Amino acid sequence: MKKTITVFKGDGIGPEITDAVLAILQAAQAPLAYEVYSVGIPLYEQCGELISEEAFASFERNKVLLKSPITTPIGSGFRSINVLLRKKYDLYANVRPAKSNPAIATPFPDVDIVTFRENTEDLYVGVEEQIDADTVHATKIITRKASERIIEAAFRYAADNQRKRVTCVHKANILKMSDGLFLSIFHDIAKRYPTIESDDRIVDNMCMQLVQYPQRYDVLVMPNLYGDILSDLTSGLIGGLGLMPSANLGSEYAMFEAVHGSAPDIAGKHIANPTALLWSACMMLDHLGEQTVAARIRKAVDQVLADKKALTPDLGGSATTQQYTQAVIEAL
Ligand code: NAI
Ligand code: MG
Image 1 (tube, rainbow, N blue to C red):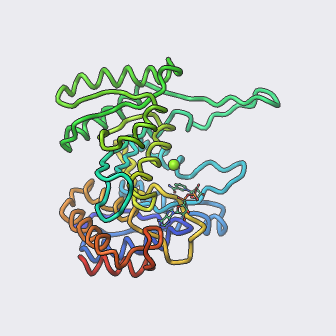
Image 2 (tube, rainbow, N blue to C red):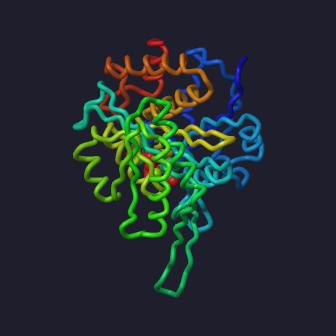
């Protein structure tokens, strides 16, 4: 039976890469039905909302969302709709796999790092307070509940996917209470997974280590802010944001999106690379139990990347989004 999923087309390059991914999913005969919604700036200009009630309702029915990037307008009064979605649906685990592809030349071969970023708290609760004209306080929140579930998710993933090691990233030497709590929970949960190695790194040292010896690292787990920053760093190790998918998982809902944004600088030029969104769709297929279809798509992409004839400009080629998409469909 076909599973119905919700699709948000996003803005900027969002519609272009969504069309590409839907064409590939259809060509791969993924057993899915789609409820597709235009969201983001064009909708906002029409009716003052970035996401319509119908679009939210569709996600609430289907529980699974494939989401394209949405621009966060700069200026007061706007909180990121992406942060809002993660909070509203309690998508507490942001999973970001960075795996080297043999066809993409980088100074760092053999990187295979999965970052588990806590997705609901830390400095991203957005509580800032003007104390006086020259002083602002921002609130960092770390709770036992949120820390336990992200750390547990990282160890469970390691156990289920034959990964060897989980590393906790923190700044508990300075933030003794908040990151200290996160780290102590990490050590407690690690005891329940005796077959998986566990250790921890202070975040600044971790940045250096990831650039010098990325091959040494496996699964990483950390609070929200460090996860935001380090997962962009790991995407740089494998060839850039155009190649970095993500899953945002909660106990009821799941949302899959590329790590990159709406790329306004190249929107409408038909040169956006849809691979990150496509690999996010593959994570979605895995989540839905459709691993065979996901594996076929990944294999077709690997073939097109290795072949190098249909690479988009971000990967050094000159293919359009459509030409790349067509090449993947032919490889399928
Ligand atoms: P960005 O990720 O959109 O772009 C950074 C650079 O990477 C640009 O040069 C862009 O052309 C390039 N790039 C990104 N994705 C690409 C792709 N698929 N193919 C080829 N090149 C690609 O980051 P930026 O410019 O900081 O953000 C633009 C907007 O996106 C902002 O409004 C931001 O708030 C929003 N954003 C939304 C996200 C989401 O919806 N989850 C995540 C990150 C940013
Ligand atoms: Mg980010």
